[in-house]
View 1: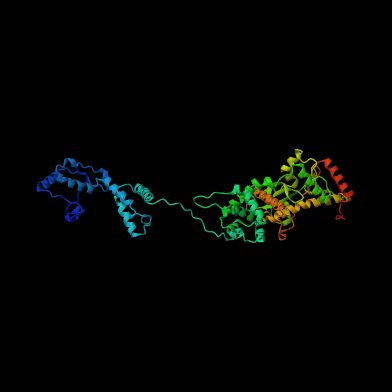
View 2: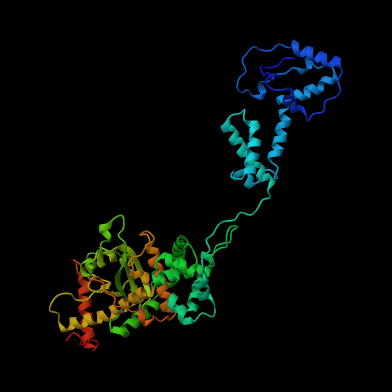
Length: 512
């Protein structure tokens, strides 16, 4: 029998009782003296390598040829002893080790990862010891993979849970209750419950989300309420989060989603230019009853919405006139709108920088393109002194030393302009976010402003009265354009209208 450089310990260094204590658990069969003598002779005849004993050798390096030595059945027990001692039956040991590691009684989540427990630490040390001969890094990796695999196999699969912060929804639940007073609801959302329900029904198919395995979807009514309350109050997102029991980022996302839905679903229904003759003639008749001017199809006005200084194109959004008047640096975007006699928007142009004058914003609008295509024939859109006189835009006289007729004309223009200015005042009063420097990004702002225009029209069409406490004096600077007159035909038409107003006793005397 050949034996690798592994040497048994001498009995002089290790007393016999201690050495043989390793074999106390094995049953030795009865052997004869002849068998023992033959085994001793074979062991003595085996050559022993003269190489020095290495510090550590792998189990695979041992190479025994027991078949040359074992000739009788009595020595098979010695073979088993040597195999168990030297680790030749490593496949069985690995199997036993695997079974031992996967046992739930010795390895639980606490015993594996909580090393402060003394007993679990002993278990870890005892189990890792057989792998001390291998590479430490590889052993740790294999051990970690094996432990995780055995835990997944041993433990039943459970539904994954996601941690969600518990926030109070008491305020919204109270508002959503049928017992909540109508006046309080209208004060909070700037509209009646019936109008709010109508908006929810219109947007339900677009803003509805499905429940997932991790959480339940936010109801449609709560989604719409977050957006409307934010637009109505202009409160910061952290306050919206407290009111509705939602995260700040969730509230911001809901506002943009609902505003986008309002712009895509409700704007085509509630912001329409009167293309058919019946609607246009009705609007013209109402304006004529109001001011005496014929063929007036709308009143145009441009207001400014303050914003935080943008990171790009700062000079373009700098509002010089507001800065000089308020003695405070101001940045803004413009909202141009055309309204009918009831103050309902029929056309809007949103988002151009605040440094642009009213006539420049007009030239960028779809209304201007519509007029160039001849769709505003025989129709006047009345503006203030910030707009030029054109074939379809009727502006007041701006020169000095006006005649009586010209003063009377300007007075009637002012009455029609008041309709548009009042409409913008109600919109800004109802949706207070338009009066505060908004936190919305510049690229998302047109969607939010468009949603405010749509909601204004819905409230106006449904007869929602504005709370008198919310009213304020709206003021926007009027800058006379460089080119006041852009059509000589318009000059003659304006003079003719002014004379008709005077001779038909529609001219007032407030200018005297």
